[in-house]
Amino acid sequence: MKTKIILLALLFSGITFVFISMNIFQITTGPHGGNIKQVDDFNIEMKIPHPDFYAYLLNKQCKPINNKGVSGEIRFFFPDSTSLDIPLQPYEEDGFRMESSVLDYYSYRVTFHAFGKFISAKFENENAIARKK
Image (cartoon, rainbow, N blue to C red):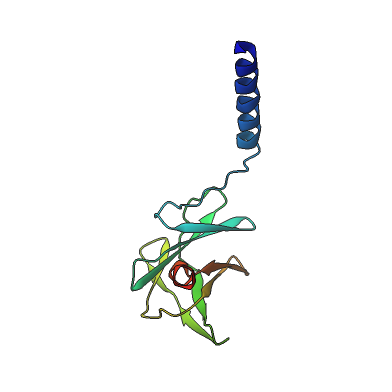
């Protein structure tokens, strides 16, 4: 019986080590405390303390990228199939900020224009998902 427990513990440890070494577990909280989504060689971090939206462009290692020469916008998607685009304003050295009273959106897409390409990710409105359930 003791041998079975030891073998199961070793098997579990081995499987855990394989998953960690394969980098299967994705970081979901960014350096500014927001939610992140991976996009190619970048990550986008969003933090939303109402009524502000903060957006950050991060490198692959989740380190903030300076906002100089970078622009961004948020497109809100509403239940009636309409959308609204609002530009992001630079905030400090590595972020973007937008103040908005928009509440009834189901999702939004953050798009940065940096390094000659568009970097974009879609986020769900967690409050709308909670109200729907």
